[in-house]
Length: 187
Image 1 (cartoon, rainbow, N blue to C red):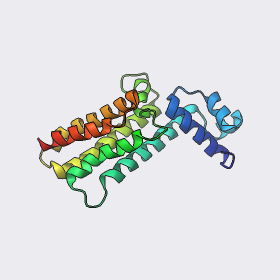
Image 2: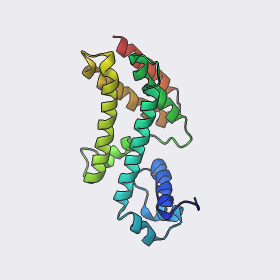
Image 3: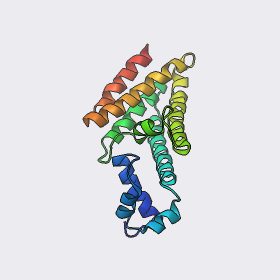
């Protein structure tokens, strides 16, 4: 951590703290963990909202890249590509720093019904839109005539697996929901 620039130390501390503790982690805690002065923090991030927005955008990029990597392996059939989403989830659930989904946790604070900060609400909304777009792109070749009916089903299985893995610590829920997706898509 000492070899990182002050900005990167702030980002690394925020990444760990927001991931484990959610969006309510305070600036003072981030400053303490990163080892920078308060003035340095505010030099790089004018507000906690700016830092949290950067965290959300980074997490979204990692999420999409992971899912795309598992869904787009060469030689996969359209069905295997969709089911690959659940392999990506299982990989994520098995990581030692898996603490659930920051976007699901952020819905209560930044979702459509809350008195949300518009920047953070936008980050959460964009995450779910990008995920849906990815699912649509994978379902179209498999179910060209009725893919729209399957998008919420697959997305719900993904979100449900994430919540259950967070609640139980059992990574096998990804396999269970992968099998459910296989059954649903065979309909």
